[in-house]
Image 1 (cartoon, helix red, strand yellow):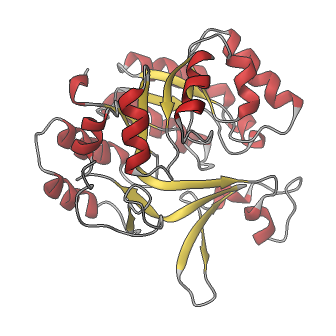
Image 2: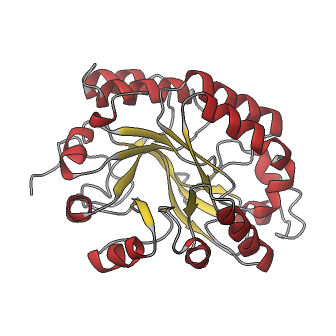
Image 3: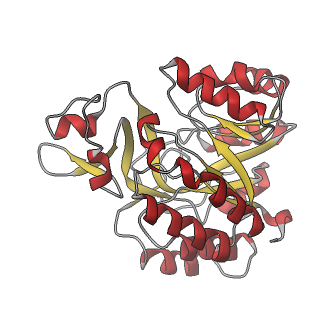
Length: 304
């Protein structure tokens, strides 16, 4: 495994609806080649997708673990059905480490070690303390968290703190499926049209500006969050885990670039050049710098 004193690198759950064979190949390469400490695995956006790939799940998990990765099983960001809550309960009862992404999941993992995902808003010490008392061993802070918030929560936390540092920023999950509606379909008869867009469907403003990305019931930023020059400062604040979100790019190469920066093998500027060759979407980092989320700020994080 990598030198965890310099920060652990994680891969968040796959948010998009990829074909089963594409998904299998992706995780096989991640297991064998990616320099990652932990992989989050599971459906977060829509439970209707699960039958397409659930038969592959245990084999994928076994291969990831054989590749030296810790595997955390992610749950839905919005649970609306009894069967979805029951599935989370059954998963927690197996004893695996679960990422809770909806407060409806908290009662199912309470008293067991678990991870709090970025869809549960943790912006203050009181919330943090309640979740830790419930058994949380790691908290993934929301993408909207500013550096001031991260500094306070990570520095005082008795548990691990994780932050997204690459990928489209998850902004919301809704009851309705925008992807289906864009094809004049309903959520119940969606025909799984989200699978037609492996990196999401662009949602533009009336003047044609790419602003958001639609992924089933989920809304994401159009641009990629890229935190490279901020990694050292975040590590100094107490952030222990740095999350990459799977996109339709070479994620092994992305992980290699971030790992090299965390290990001080290359500079953030050098890694930026490598990353620019892999990504076409604009880069964003505004939330962390106290700006609008789609902003790109060139300067370092401001000291406390």
